Amino acid sequence: MGFMNLTGRDRPLGLAPASVRDYRELARRRLPRQLFDYIDGGAYEEATMAANVADLRRIRLRQRVLRDVSERKLGTTVLGNELSLPVVLAPVGLAGMFAQRAEVQAARAAAGIGVPFCESTVSICGIEEVAAATDRPFWYQLYVMRDRAYAEDLMHRAQAAGCSVLVLTVDLAVVGARYRDVRNGMASSLSTAKKLLRGLDFALHPAWVRDVAVGGKPLTFGNLEKAVPGASTPGAFREWVDSQFDPSVTWDDLAWVRENWAGKLVLKGILDPQDAREAVTRGADAVVVSNHGGRQLDDVPSTITALPAIVDAVGDRAEVLVDGGIRSGLDVVKALALGARACLIGRPWAYAVAARGEKGVTHVLRILRSEMEVALSLTGVTDVRGLDRSALVDVDDAG
Image 1: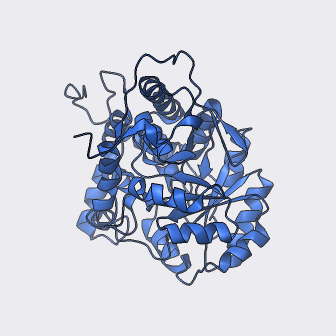
Image 2 (image 1 turned 45 degrees about the vertical axis):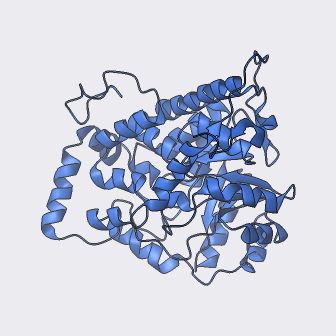
Image 3 (image 1 turned 120 degrees about the vertical axis):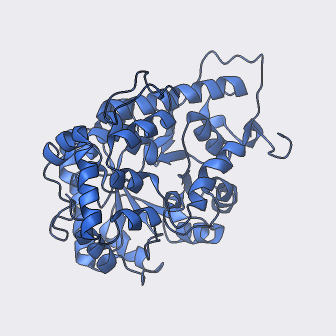
């Protein structure tokens, strides 16, 4: 990958990054270990997180030749909005800890390319700060909290800020054990010795300290400023999570959400066809086939293997989106061929913003677009909306 000549952890690469994988390496070198592991890690032994990527890699595109592919269309429509690419920047919690006001930078990059940005409930930048930074409507992601009045206030704030889509995350009744976060103190208390080691690790990343710890203030959860005192105290964040994530939520609570949200409603965290049918019956405009990036329950199916059955179950009654393991434009093409309307990407933009801020996110989106252009051209498809399973070779036949 051209990284062997790099000797300093915070020094730039000698070669320009060419892929999401390159941006991951840049982020690894620039971020303190605790923060990189938070982006990069998954639940338990990380089997599902790995499967999200590996199962996509096993799918083969069907190469076709001697077709006029001189003009290619990558734009699509999602929930009534025109997108230049079938891609959405997924909600990423704590993103503002990776780069200075990272959510604002990512929202600007998304608007510049013409795709949606989805703000996380646990973002560092608040809804209003993101809204002031871009003239393009963005999405808002919500967890159902025990404090329903606080959740209602967040929905009302999002609507007032011009958010057009609410993404309700439904796979966090309890929080999966993320062993990396436990080991490095992100999800547990540390001994004095380990705190000193963590402090040393932060000190060994001066570029991050200047950009985020000093220049990125205030480091508070912009949407939860009344509930969580500061993002720089992992213990306070964990305490809020434990106290507010509600394991008693049921399908009946969607009626309450609908009473407080007038826009489009998306349910994120669907892996089972029956749950997908229920979501549509209960009024969801779209579902996201998601296992939380492999960060919740390990040993569940990868999203790409779960996708076809959910597409078949939903039919044309709602739109189906997918996330998990998307690392290239080729992956996007594969997901669309299996029936997804668009893909949400989380780690790719998180790596990019950590490495190079807004320019990095813009570059990653351009990389995905370029990779999609090639994939369409060499599969003989001229419009992403025309992708179907005929663009794929059966895995067993592909060798």
